[in-house]
Every structure is written in C-alpha cells, then in structure tokens.
Length: 416
Image (cartoon, rainbow, N blue to C red; front, top):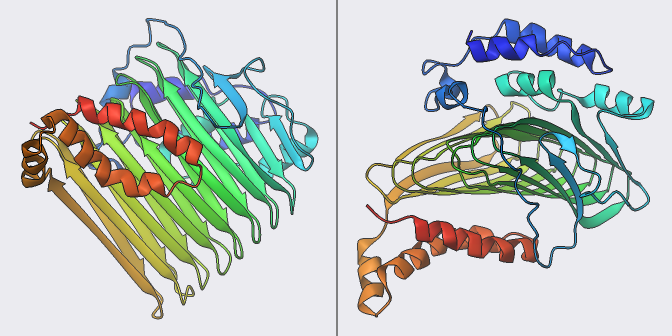
C-alpha cells in the first residue's frame, strides 16, 4: 500500500450520517492493493504524478467560466465547498436539491438507498471519494417533470488544493433533464469527482462532462448511469487532459428498450495524460448503445482508451456499436486503445473498432499550396476530425462556446 493511500485511510475517520458508507469504503480500501503496471485497469497509467504531487504552494481558484448564450442554473463548488454566492438555488416545482452535508432525513434515505450502488465498488478512487467527500449534491427530479434548463455543476479546485465532489441524480419516470458537469483544476491540484444517475422508465437525460484542468493538475472521477425501461441518455465528454486525468464512464441497461448515446473527445497537448475507461452493460433485451470516441494526441502526450461492451445472456435484440478513432500528431505521442466486446446472447448486432493515424501530409500540403498557412491548415484538419461529434451536441450554446477553445488547443499542437 502506498504512503498516499495510507494517509487517505488516516483521514477517513469522520463521524456523520455518512459514516456507514465511509466505514465500508475504509474496510475495502484496507484490503485493496495500490495499482501498478501489472494491474490490468491501470496498465498504461501510472499514479506516480499523484504520489509526487506538491500541494504545498497555495494559489487562487479558477474563475467561474461564463458560457455565452447558456441559460443555466449553476451550482458551484470551490475547493470542495458549495459557494452559495455563486450558485442559483431557485428551482422549478418537482426539482429538489440538497447538499450532502445538510441532507434531510428524506435526502439521507435517498442517498443511502443509491449511494455507491450505481458506481461500481471496484473503482479504487470511487472508494477514496467515499472516504474523503464532505460536500456533494442529491438531486431529485419528480416523475413527469420536464426540467430542460441546463443544470450546471461546476467544481473549481485552486492551486495547491485538494477537492472531492459527489453528485447523485434521480430522474423519475418520464422526467426530462439536462445536466452539465464541469471541472477546472488550477496548477498543481488534485480532485476527484463522481456522479451517479438513475433514469426511471421513459426518462430522458442530456448530459455533458467537461474535464478542463490545467497541465499540472490531477483529476480522477467518473459518471455512472442506470437506465430503466425506455430511458434515453445522450452524453458527451470533453477531456482537455492534465498531467494525469482518469475518467470512468459506466452505462447499465437495467430495463428493456433503453437507448444510450455516448460521444467523447480528448485533446492532449505536450506531456498530458488522459485515460478513459467506459463500460456498457446490456443486462436486458432490446437495448441500444452507440459510443464514439475521438482523440488527438500531441507531443509526448499519452492517451488511453478502454471501451467495453458486455452483452449478457438474456439481452437479445441488442444493438451496440463502439468506435475509437485517434489522430497522432507526434511520433513521441502515445495512444493505447482497447475496444472490447463480450457477448453471451445470440440474436444481437454488435460492432467495435479502433484506428490510430497520423495527420494526412497530402491534405496538409494541399491546403498550404492554396495559400493557407501551415498552422491554420493544421487547425482546419484537426477540427474537421472532431467537428462531427461537436456538431452532434444538442446544446448549441455549449458547442459554440467550446469551438474557439478547441481551436486554441489545436493551435498549440504542432506536428513533430
């Protein structure tokens, strides 16, 4: 066990209503080995940047990003504390939000019934989040409520700080909602963030996760979804990297005729590391999943993609497709991709695939011969690679806000 994990266990003794959850997580942590390169789930990702992270120098927290044209209800955390002066707490009828720290008896009962049941207990940092989280949110949306104003949950972590956030969202039958998870970490900082979603029958969730941390930050987290009969999930993940970012996304089809669409884009600059693990569990018949991941990796950056679709024995008539396409801008960059299909039903349509390619020099040359500077031509080719997924984002204000930031990232990525 690493000294870092030992310190976490020592900090876990807090007596509050979440103590049973913490005690269970602590007991599991004490039996858990610290991942090494021999641990399959961490084979291509070293945790040394976390163990070596210097949090002694304190700095300011990032500013709350303003997304022009986005009319959202914001819930803002700074260094793990809910900032009521930056948050909007006026909610429509049928929507209830409680903080973990001040949860009512009903909120506690809700959380205890679901907490850590959607999120797989096998995730080491999910257990660490269980132990260290002090504040988080419980969000309940009643059956039949259409809550279409985006609910933006922002987690700001300042330089030299550590923060841990947890969100639990329940959509009742036929409810509809849009949730944006946005994380920003400044300089050397460490944050964990896990969100668990339960979608009732015919519920619809439009979901975004924006992991936009600076290069020295370490961020580990995940989003986990349970889909019941005829539920609809449309999720987009954007990863900007950092010295170490690891995200796990799990989607479980627990009812029939559920549909999930999951797009993700990661753009890695000099020395950044981004690890995305997705697991799709089809446990019931007639489910549909479409997953598309596209990554662009620059100089000495490293991307890891592990996407797994598991079709259970009774999940007949499942339609599932997983694609991971990568563009490598430097011979010193590294991409490890591993799409997996595990099928135990015989009447399904499933496909998966992965590609890694370098920038098309002929296309680059063609654009340059038309008078387009090399840097601009590079931006055009890179942006074209991911444009399709950005255009599929249902929230156009968010897509328009992202585009100049993506282009700025491309301008920093020179082909080497």
